[in-house]
Image (tube, rainbow, N blue to C red; front, side):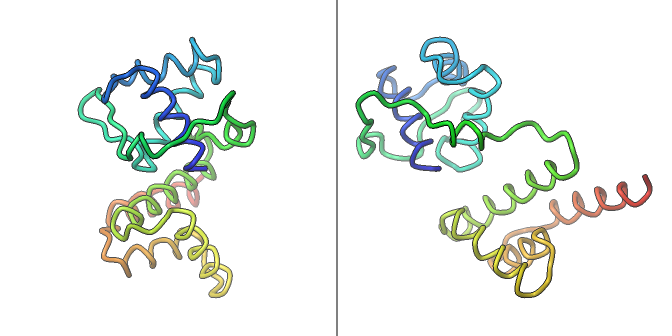
Length: 167
């Protein structure tokens, strides 16, 4: 998924000829000019790029965190349906919120260790299955093992589960 996201980002940056773009200069071409995504999906692409640390934001300015020259854009490239299907949507249910927390924990581990997020997710899933733990607990244990501050995630999960039990 990251490779396709890199191609999408590289396409827009290379097309603009600029080393940095405003958020709107990244989102609007994806939706309005290229017609690859709806506006909501294009915003989700930017959000995903930020989460995956493929874009560095300074205020409203975005810069790619990878070398654009290393990305080859295939002739006739367009994002796949699979990519569109996995775009992050705004969390609306507790299950979707858990996914968002999981992604943030995975990203924190990736930032701390340099491991690819896919490898981290695989490790979390294996530990979760083998030790009969929830994925969130496995993710927190892995984060703690790699010296990632988990206080924010603990309080968020604790408040969510406390709310679920009372409703």
